[in-house]
Image (cartoon, rainbow, N blue to C red; front, side, top):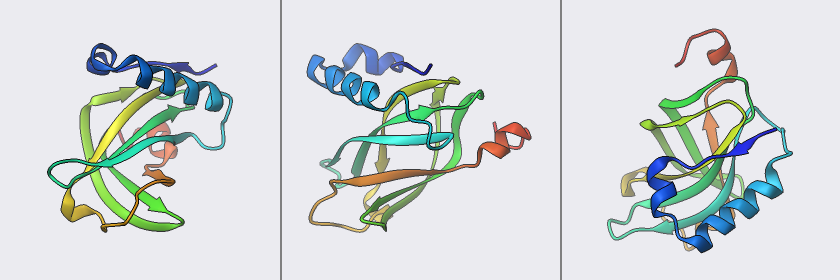
Length: 137
């Protein structure tokens, strides 16, 4: 069964209300296995630099360590892609059968401005077959 983990800096800095919200989302999704790696939305925001911040719970339902090395992410609302970026995040390593929260930052030039960014879905474009064949680490 999947477990919830927090990256060390998240674990230290996370407010109690946010931690409870993440635990609630985890409990609602921990039995889902609709794909090998998938994300559950937590929140979206625009920061002072006009970057789009997309916070999700990343679920690794595989038997493989999941890393974000040259990993393309798409953020869609109502089926329309509004953000597209390749991420390399050495600090984000998700062990097998673990769910972990993370905020992905899409710079101003990597997304289409919207009235609202709510109800979106973050998609990870990395195939688990690549892990199984040792192509991607």
